[in-house]
Length: 193
Image (cartoon, rainbow, N blue to C red; front, side):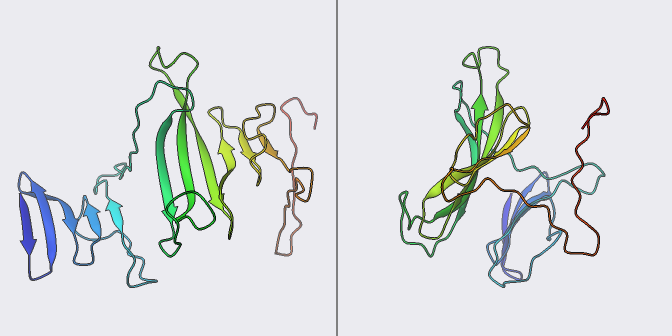
């Protein structure tokens, strides 16, 4: 059932007499309820998509991005963050795509066992630059960070920051703005650290 209500200028999609999805007069989409759980009013022209799991405790809204691949490094899903004020439509310094999160498959047997894993890549674009992968969370929970994309696939350490050896240093800061000191605890289960 699809209804349009002139009194509120919204469109309603229902199944078995129950509202499932609403498109508001502002072009926002709400699924699972009739109004927003939280509405960011910092800008009057924000656009929302809300997936609400329902009033039952433990229920949740899920955004599912699915792909189908049997290839190692095959694409599974991507979230794009675009700046429509940029002019370019293809990769380069003026492209509209400004950052992205991407998931790729990990498989050693073309997924013959139907058990492929996945890793996540994080891409950003500097002002006047090109979109570059700068962080990767591997399928085993290793986090690699490099502004130039170096050694994002290393597996020797659970966390690694890599510089290019030139003008970019491999640096990390732990800073506390308050009155207490910053701390870094190195601990080991056998008591040595």
